[in-house]
Image 1 (spheres, rainbow, N blue to C red):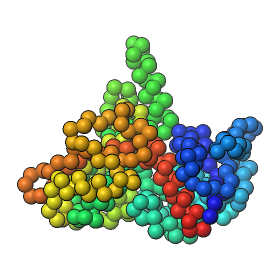
Image 2 (cartoon, rainbow, N blue to C red; image 1 turned 180 degrees about the vertical axis):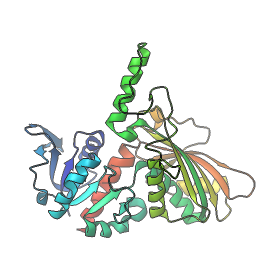
Image 3 (cartoon, helix red, strand yellow; image 1 turned 90 degrees about the horizontal axis):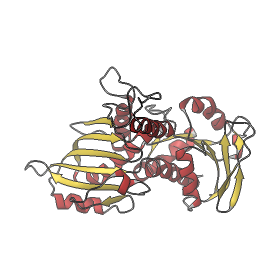
Image 4 (cartoon, one colour; image 1 turned 45 degrees about the vertical axis):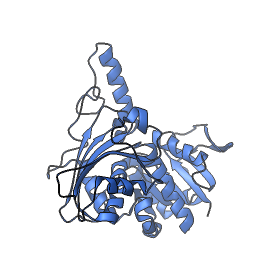
Length: 335
């Protein structure tokens, strides 16, 4: 079924990448409605040489759309999502308002695409966050092949985790510092430029940050629990785009480094295994990359069950925009 699609947040970084993905033929659609909170915004979005004029989200009739991407802030999702759902429209909410809500389906198409029926029923779905996507898409092949007993991950998240607010703040602070002026934090607790934050989001009573708890919740939803547990630590790095994660796994069955590499290589549609001696960086390898990059696969100890690897992905394009479009495609196949 060719969908009628609304996009609230068409001019955000993720919104622009969704439009780019649609323009590349990533999803067949019958109509497209770019939405803005501004009145009198006489602008248009071009997809496949067709112009689609921007409409005011407060006046828009969501009954015109089958699916609406909400690439906006949590308070705007809170204000408008129920209105869209009551009109019969399915909301794909990327604002993270419902993250951690066990009654709302979390979808990562490559892992639990069959759960899309639950999202049809609730008319609301949360795409897995980019970090959860990176973890699950690298762990699922290992889980299926060898079983997973325990997983520990340390993630270095780029400032685009916070959207344009993060990238603009890093750019401004860098400019100020290079010109010998004191930086301003622009809503962040500490300086971003040439710095590292030991948490992402507010610290909670259990000692984990908001981002860590969201990740733990989503990984458990998508992969189930591991016998000896799952733990993640999230740091914020002074990088514009591209997340990096170091993952330590304990398998249930023995394996070799070569066997793990062959397992990763069995999923070329979303994983790209790189040589262990190749130096990967977000700037040179990750930006605009559609796959998750994996390298530095190595064995820890002599048990044959403990391994570690490094994974990287373009969090905005692959981690968010492409995942959102893939979810919409599942709806098109189901409706």
